[in-house]
Length: 245
Image (cartoon, rainbow, N blue to C red; front, side, top):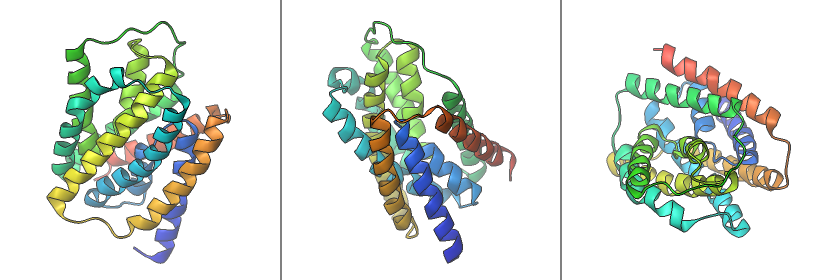
């Protein structure tokens, strides 16, 4: 990787972390989109996206815990099997073509999520324990396989199924992202015994961008246009992964 490419990717990571944290997400799908557009190898994309996700999710977790929106009672059934499944997903390395298709589909789903507006809050009800545990296990495995945290799926599911109000769903999702990203990264490192050295400048950029974004987002920063822009980028990257060999 040339210094010019390294600098450009670092700048893009900073912008992605800023934009995602403004709308309450850690940014894994955005980091994957950037790294994919620059044609990095899947073996480097997954651990890099996971570590960036962890850093930004830490900022979001602190913010939501301080605000009092997190519910341990609702969280633990989703997390109890998601963590070991995320470790397994991180440990497994899919063939390149399967990885590209799977991640491409995840990016397109993420784009759709940003195009749609959440429904209005109504009185929530808890899911049954078996449903919550099974859902968490599936999302944990998917997060480990793709290098995401699973929050992009958990948030709309919690809201659509009326299992949580919007702020509670966001709080649960950011902690879910954090624990699954940690497990996925540990699983990936256990399998590969390596980590991309060039990712450290990206990590610093993610912390800076995520810190500013979290601050502005928590102060009701206008996010509608940002969501649409993120959706366009994710759509382009998703189709690139699926249809480029």
